[in-house]
Every structure is written in structure tokens, then in C-alpha cells.
Amino acid sequence: MLYRSHDNLIPGFEQFVASHNQVTLLTAYLKLQALEEINRSNHINQIVVRWQVSDLCGKTPASELEEIWTYCKTNKIKLYRNTRLHMKVLWSGSNEAIIGSANITRNGLGLFDTSNFELAALTSNLGTDDLIYLNRVLLEDSNLVTEDLYHQLVAAKEKAKLNALENPTPVIQELPETSNKSDKFLTNQLPMFGDIKGLYAAIQNPDQIDHIERNCLYHDMALYGLNAAMPELEFYATLRMNFIHHPFIAAFLEEIRQQTPHASSPHRPSMGFTNVTIWFSKNTTEVPCPKRWELKSHTRIIYDWIQYLSEDSYTWDRPNGGSQIIYYEGLVKE
Image 1 (tube, rainbow, N blue to C red):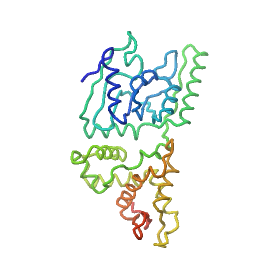
Image 2: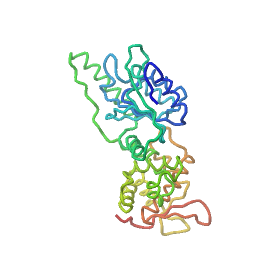
Image 3: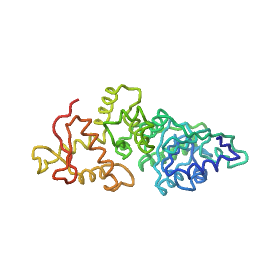
Image 4: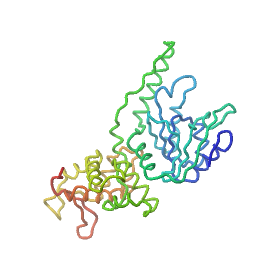
């Protein structure tokens, strides 16, 4: 199906957003009025926008800054910045997406009689490589817009505005590209697929698992730099290296090593399940911070991943049938 500006594009976008519980919007340029037009259902939960400083300046900036920031905070939308972004996509998080030429602006959506002519198409058969690619753009190549980054952009915009008043041909200074370490401590940086031993088999036969498991699978493939063409030994070697050395996981493993041994095993540093969920809740940079009980499913998955990928340098059990305890057994083999 084609969506055409000045015709069915806005209702088509709005219907797509309304028909999915969680939608990710990726767009180079973004303005509030256009975003509100397609998000009447409030189902957009993640946005990736380009937001180069030059996009925010001039008499008619390509994107709005303060308005979008406030809207996302009010509506609890995770907002990411990717200065290399040029795609225009509404993505269901699964195998459905609308892909086209229209930015989410008034001109892009055709809100004026003189607006651009744009086309977009609905696809319902995104493949494995497509989904890994979209996850990778979000997880690896985009920076969460924090309060600090937002205020840096505001300051850069104001500096460019003053520069324009003083110079007939101003040069806009872009913010330097930096890796945001805090992005590695978001909950989307934790594994989601439950069967670590069956991960390779699942990616070889993704149609054999349900759509929720597939979404988790593609998330983890993107997060840890994996692809289905890898031989199994290379696949797990790459996964092990990228998982064990991921900043969030590495910090957690160090925390376990610093713990006092559990009474049931006096020679092994350990952490109980409740303390583990508390640690992740306190150490994530997620805003708002998730409650510890919201991290239970993450924690159970992490236990299995750590034991398997550390080759039993860390193990877990349930002493006397109680809650799970994770133990440090000794040096992790490199």
C-alpha cells in the first residue's frame, strides 16, 4: 500500500501508530504539530531524530528542539539523537513498518497546500537482516537525549543564533561526536532472549519461535554484533566476548566479586536475587528509573547468560529451594 501526501498519508500514519502498542519513529526532521497529528493514540514510545545543530537554527529550522523535548518528557517517550540519520520510518518493533520519503514535519506530511509531494509504503515482511539493522541503529548508533545533552544542544543553538546576528555568513558549530557511556547502562542494553543455549538454533530457524521471542532475538543479535551467517563456534565466541565485556554486565560482575560469601557457601562471593534487582535498578541510567520488581525477568535471563557464557566462572542456584543466588567461582577465562 502507498501513502500519498495531500491524500491518505496522515490518516495512514495515524492508523499504523494506533494499531500497534509500541511504535518507534525514526526521522531526520521532526516538528511538534506533525508529531501530534500521527500520535493521537500516544503509542509512539521511542523516537530517533537527527538533531544536528544546523537542523535547529535559522528562521524556519528543519526540526524543533524545546517543543519536542517537552513533548517526549510529558509523554514518557524515549528520545534518541543520531546525527547520521536520514531514514523516515515508523516501525512496530516487529516485522511491520512504514518506510518512505516524508519527514515528520508540516511540509513532510502535507499540512499545507504548497507542501512537498511525498510517498510512503507499508511493509509487513521485514526480514531477519532488516530487523537486526533497525535494532542496531537504535541500540548502537544512537545516543539517548539526556538532560545534559539537551542543554548542550540548547546552548549550541543559542550560540549559533548570536553568531548569525554578528556575521552575514555564519558558520554553525556542530557538537563533537562523542560516545555516551551512560547509554550502555540502559535496560535496553541487557539481554532479552531467554534460552541462551538455544540462541544460535533460534536465529537459524526464527520462524519456529513466536513473534515476541523473535523480537527479543533480533534485539540481542544487534546488541552483541551477531549475524546468522556466523558458524556456531564463532557466533558464541563473539557473543561471549561482547556480553562479558559490555560495560553494564562488566560492572555487575565486578559487584559480585566484591560481595561477601553467602552463609551456605562461605568461600564464594555471592549476591541474592533481591540485591541483584536493587543493583540494576540503582545503576541503570534509565529515566524514570525502573522499579526493582520490573527487572525480575531481566535478572533471570542474565543469570543464565552469565553462567553459560562465563563457562561456569559464575554460577547460580536456589539454596534450600529459596530465591536465586549468583556466585563467583573464580577467574573468567579470556
